[in-house]
Length: 426
Image 1 (cartoon, rainbow, N blue to C red):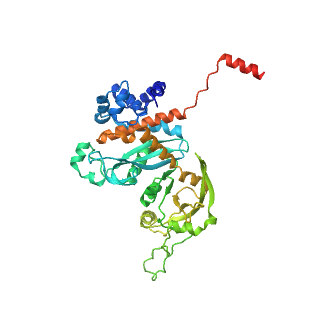
Image 2: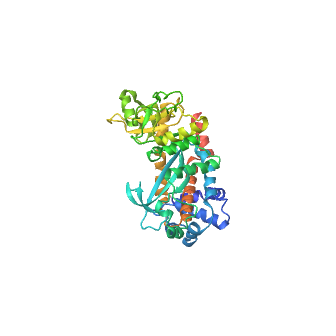
Image 3: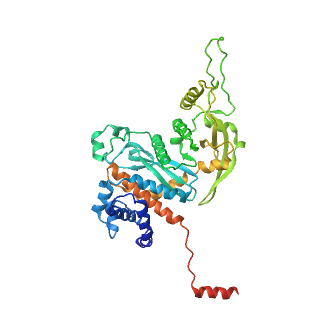
């Protein structure tokens, strides 16, 4: 947005800030919130505090630096208010788990470490944040963020002190951070219609089990080597060794094949063409098949067996079933994509495909958050500063989304135009 466009929405932005940042205790801090959001939305290649302060007529670099890096205002109530405004507006079809990486130099920026960097497509020095987004085909917004703390930071007292990481924060796997965010949102009485994630999350059987425990439906991408039994496969047990012998545990007698083998075994004739949305170059379509399967593996079996044993003292060996969705494009020699879904058995394949492909919208979010609103331009090194900046960027994104989705006011028609129109029609 240029300065003129920002000026046109200045009153609306003021009302937005007054509501979303109402939990911020001091009036001058709320004024700096307004200033910071305008700096993020203004055109400009860099969205560092120094660059934003130079563009704003009321920008003060020292004040903005203090506000984002040293102030003690709590970002959590602000995040909650953003969610309360955006969820009814967007009316999402799914919540998407994802993560974003920011390349960094040096080793003193909070949570920076050599790790896989999606922005560069390789191992690099970077920060990684896990996020949850509410999404439809036409709109989306971040709901929660968690900064991933690598293991090397967990016991590095010097760096933790310098970057002001709270004592209770330690290393947690990314999938656990995603669950933490879902639990936080559940505590605010917010729940997803469906949880969607890529294969980095969906392949993890512990995550799938945790979502099932929370009674959250999911459509999760998985790797081709994930194993599953066909739906009609049944476990069996050898005969009991005498009337007083131990009862053998039922189990599947054949090794579970990979989902790639299951999908290929269906044959190309089992795949049907499905269109999931209109793209910039026309309808997006491919060939898909959906079958019921029983995911296998120790990580799947253990919680099922434990729950059955605790409830009835016996497990019949039957693994829970779910959907396997596979994609096999016409120009491919083998299937290219796989998803597991806990949605009901009568779910149409078009709905499964639509949800499996909804992640594209989050890539749109990241482009706007990073290139348009400076998500990755933050130069502060502290834990509080990172969370303040991310919350402010999310607020700016939410405000722009609200403006885009707001009903357009009709163009006023002058009396002379009305009379000339009436004369022509009569």
